[in-house]
Length: 116
Image (cartoon, rainbow, N blue to C red; front, side):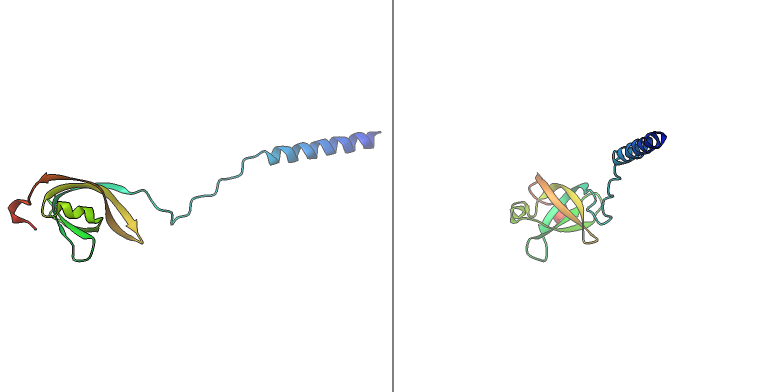
């Protein structure tokens, strides 16, 4: 009788331990290191000109004086040689930073100081 009680107790102990082990949450897998990081919002203001390649544009930023070259839709042709404000994101494309425009608005119908 003691053996049956001992076996039953051992069985209940082991099955209870297994049940509680099975209920422990599994660790979540970590995200891969090469997963796309969040884009950085940016606003550029300046003179919009045509780039040297098809569907590329350049903007001489009024604030920094830096010329930013980026690709965009042919709709940007409507804003060429105007002072504009472009809102977009700085994105990582294969290890290189690139500007991706989202919105554009005209600030002046021409570029100041004859910029082009």
